[in-house]
Amino acid sequence: MNTKRSQGTRKVESEQGKVTIGIDLGDRFSHYCILNGEGKVIETGRIKTSREAFAAHFQDLPPARIAVEAGTHSAWVSRLLEESGHEVLVANAREIPTISHSNKKNDNGDAEKLARYARYDPKLLSPIKHRSPSAQLDLAVIRVRERLLAARTMLINATRGIVKSSGYRLRSCSAESFAKQSRSQVPKVLSEILIPMLDQIATLTEQIRGFDQRIEQMAESKYPETQVLRGVKGVGALTAMSLVLTVGDARRFGKSRDVGCYLGLRPRRSQSGERDPQLGITKAGNRPLRATLVQCAQYVLGPFGPDSALRRWGLTLAQRGGKNAKKRAIVAVARKLAVLLHRLWVTQKPYEPFYGLPAGAMPATR
Image (cartoon, rainbow, N blue to C red; front, side, top):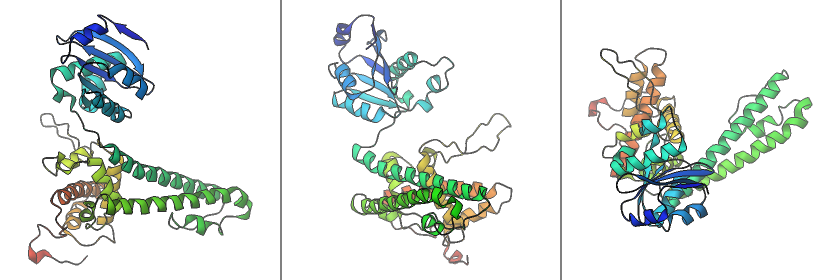
């Protein structure tokens, strides 16, 4: 461990209840900075990013306020430090320009900035709260399914590309039936090469189906609150579970409409004087959940989407014209869907497809 000490460990111990620590977490090594009650740096250094190293270095220190940057290791690090009696703040670096957009960024400097922000005003860190270990494991089930789905899509595209480059084509079919349907269509000259790939696609399809069944069971047994969310046509167990596990606590938002901003579905803004350009969404927050909501919005506005107030609102936006009108409508419906699902989660009231519309306006033809 490479450590630079200005006044020694005993000085840290003498500042009980007053020290503030900033830790810049790295994949292999993490840098830390310790400030005393007067804001002076009393110790800096780096330690290996492992449970053993963190426990050995921080568990014997007196209770302190520790700020770490949100990232891959922040969940287990924050829990380990809290178990040692420390107050832990997980900083959202995207909201700290001096860290995320600094032109002289370095690990030691980031650690000191985290410590100084935590010492002065923790709200400046825009702290986040990690989900529970149980919820994190359940969310991992959804994440693994996503990776298997991406792997299957990649293999299907590769198979079609190889066949097409030889002057043949495979008929259109669903991803679930691709392996079975394509076996009889693969040219003999490519059969020996592509059959192993089709076998792998079939295996992935079975694994994805198994994960779908597991998610259904989890939604029914562990997360019964998702049942009311699934009352919205186009929203299944996967979407409902993703929202509940990503948000964690339904009461974390004062207003349901804040969920759209949290998931990055709010338009960016760069207004100055008379200039107020129309920009795309922020794309902040959880990307997989945002993509899932966009898929649900596509169904709501698609040919098989049932009539509802949400569908009518989205179709009205799509009819306003412009080459990107439909894309903007899909994103807008996804944002409104996120707000709707959160509201249903909070109230646990059944979904009303025509809520807010006058009685004379429903039902209507598709």
